[in-house]
Image 1 (cartoon, rainbow, N blue to C red):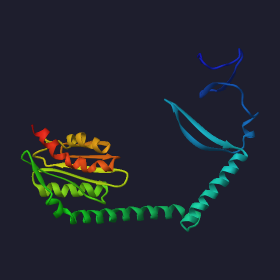
Image 2 (image 1 turned 90 degrees about the vertical axis):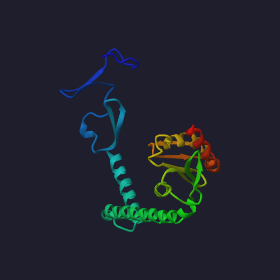
Image 3 (image 1 turned 180 degrees about the vertical axis):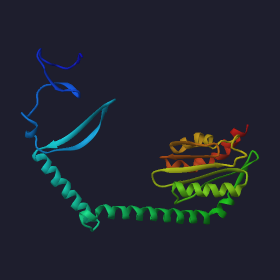
Image 4 (image 1 turned 60 degrees about the vertical axis):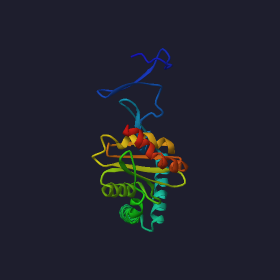
Length: 235
């Protein structure tokens, strides 16, 4: 095998493990493996197709690493007020609590959004014979926004629903199209045409699409453009 780019003298050292590997080697750093002492792998990963690399510490370096890991575990345990052996159970319980609270928050946000549905119904308009709603629903996350869009789709009967929410840095929007209109007015097409107004993009199915953007100030223009997009697609 020729190793182009590598620099070796005329005589090179070869380290062979019969039946396992044969490598060119510039020289080992110890006389025998026992000189290495402890060896602890600290990292493993791929560096090329079919090639993996392990990194580790040896000798007294292992003791330093163990002390560092022990200090880290103690700090973690102290931060949640348990002993080190109790840490895994405590972290699992905290994860379950967070998931439960997230679910409750989503339910509360959905209820808040649901309370505003009558006001949204009053904003339903019509363009080219198609009923549509394009509105901002403040204080929602992506999940509650989808839920609200689903409810408004059911209430509109036949039509197109676009709901959006924003904060200081980003915009999220959902488009729902009733099935009788999804062939003529695919939801993904609305996202494709409107999302750039808020500096973003997205996609989805003909009956539902989502998008995000980084220009919250563009949301009013996006909502006002909905009617012209419907008009163009209806031609």
